[in-house]
Image (cartoon, rainbow, N blue to C red; front, side, top):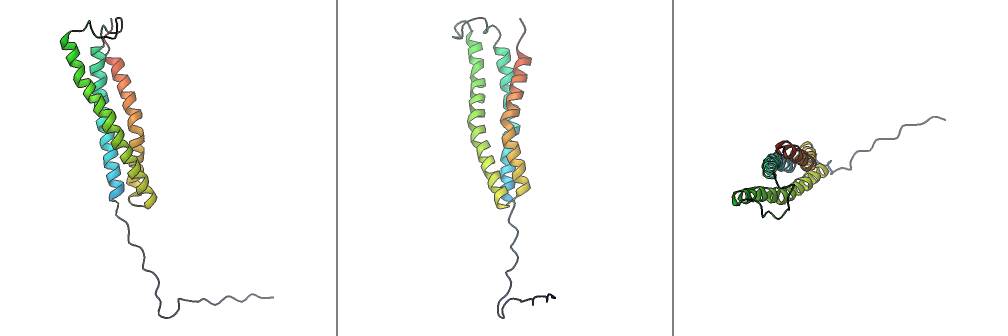
Amino acid sequence: MSFQPQPVYGPPPGYYAAPPAEPRPRTLGAFSMGIALGVFVLSVVASTYVGMSAGSLTHGMASSSASGSHLSSAQLAAFGPVGIVTAAQVIFGTILGILALVLGIVAVATKRGRAFGVVGIAAAAAAPVVSFIVYTTTLAASVPHA
C-alpha cells in the first residue's frame, strides 16, 4: 500500500489572504513602567526622609507616655511634615502603584509593550517592600542612643 500526497488547495479564486496584523504600540507598557519607576524612586526617597526624621524625633518618647504632653511645641511641630509625607506616600503610592500594576498586566496580556509592562509590574510590586526595608533601616540608624 502506498500513500499518495494530498493535493494542496489554495484560497478560492477571488479571495486573498488576510494582511499581517500591524504591530501594536508599546505606549501602554512604557506608561506602566514610567509610573512604577516613579513610584519606586519617590517611595524610597520618602521612606528615607520619614525614617531619618522620625528616628531623631523619637528620642525620649519611648520611656514616657505616648500622649506627647512632655514634648515641646517645636518637637510637636516637627512631626507635622513627617505625618504629611507619610500620608502622601501611603495614599499616592498605593493608588499609583495599583494603577501601574494594572496597566502592566494589561500591557503584557495584550502585547502592547510586553517588556515594559513586565518591568512595570516588577517595580510596582517591589516598591512597597523596598520602601519598608529602607524605612526600618534608616529609622534604626537615626534613633539616638541613650
